[in-house]
Length: 262
Image (cartoon, rainbow, N blue to C red; front, top):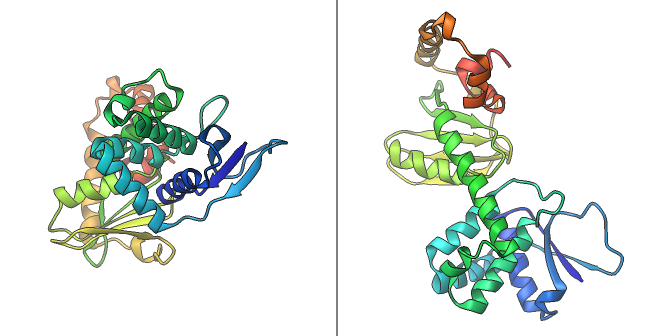
């Protein structure tokens, strides 16, 4: 067995798919993995994949031209998932590789995505569901704060790499605002300049001290919001258990009304 070890990113996985197909080692003899395995197998050869933008582009063009954007979106969402491969669950890189092979063999990507009896396709379904759920939660719980320079800034700690979805959504909803969304989990930032598109960049140069300085208006409105939040509740109807179900505790640190309790 040949195991192609990929970087846990879209570029890393798609490069692994390209290299695996180009290797001519036989698809049944190949497996893809994101990251080093916990236990190495005795008779397996491990091949480390170096991410390549050129190879990634070729895989994307093949997928979109032959199977359409809906198939690509499903593969993309699966690649963005941070759900770990534990127990008998297939590694997402291997699930993506095998699903693409099924589509190439059948010529019908949409039909393949409906074949949930296939372990790789069902795994793609699970990963897409997790990514979509995470994106929906952050659309509900994300809180912008106005900085001293007038930029709207938000911090998130997502399990999955949902930053592109959030950036696209808020670019559409807030086109005339300058805003930044900082993904502390994956150390990336979405930067949007008013009346233009957004860019995704590495967070290495982000000045965390500077983005914690709020404007005077922000401080005032934040206090008003906290006062409203504290007084709107009916004392006899308080239900902390239900509250934690509706807003899981891992989101609290990024919301002004709950960060006080962290």
